[in-house]
Length: 444
Image (tube, rainbow, N blue to C red; front, top):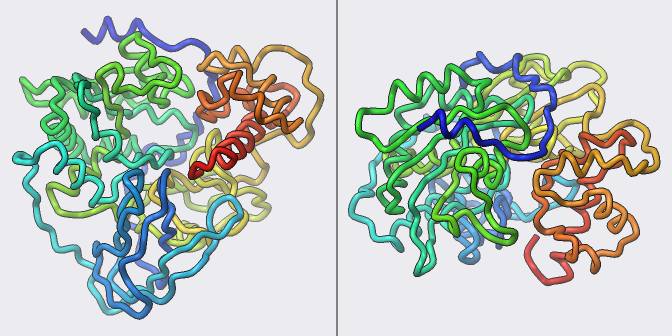
């Protein structure tokens, strides 16, 4: 079966240098607790969460502190035991401020989480969706789309297959890799829970071949008769985009404007599946996540289990700080991540990496005129015309851009990476998409 799967790949894409060697063999360490945590209310795509605590309240680790503000929204839970010290605007990635719950950790609390399993075998479809929303689980590959919305299947549709995204194609990042190596049984239990509650018949874990230890370990832990297989994938970026993953493994395309469930599939990141297992097996909501800290500007690269809300400054301090001459710190990967203007921004649910560079990696230091070489077209896995979209965005002709399928762009950055003129194509497209959403009255 897998020999057949290996015949498929997706067209276009790019091959950036992997740069994973600094952390690929480093076990996950637990980040020590710090004094203060900042929990923005808009850590997911969709509506912001609504606080259910007041300033001065005592909270326990894992306690609900904000409820969903709409269906496309999630719960927030306290990452530590302590006290709510403020509910106000705090620094947020992108150079803006966001309404946040600020929690001061109790230095005398053990910060132990009282584990309690939850029964997942007797849940109906709506009850299961409600449980996932209650747990605050989102897509943890970076998109932070509420997971329960993926599991809410419209009447008339049926999920046949669960696809687990272990590609981790972004350079530098190794957090998914380490989780597959160190927690294979928990990952497989999360898959079992999702197969049962989605009514799916089988699951495939897609892993790029630059992670041979993860492929071997997962295969070794799959029990005979389990409807789970591991599909080794060619190393290519953006393999981890769900539509590209489906194309690579099954040779099928999700139609423009469509979703994987239209093909009878649900795609989940490794971290999201493990979060499902943690909620039902231990009763732990999403209050911490694994983050890769790397780049040539970091003194001690690491894979860390970090409580949500931890300021980047504290994470980097634990890694012995930054080297001299650092000019850029990125949240996420170098291709799709966001440069931060302050180290006071907190780790969020979607923070997969913290990368520090001495020389900025996002764009060339000098931009030249477009030479119409077509390299961005050859790189775009969605067969868009990035150079045209960039020109329209530069001219602020946003209303013309939907004609050229701008909303199909997943902002993978392949166009910017391949542009010999150093044009920040994906940044221009990202700004245009934001303007279009705002003009349509949608939540950005």
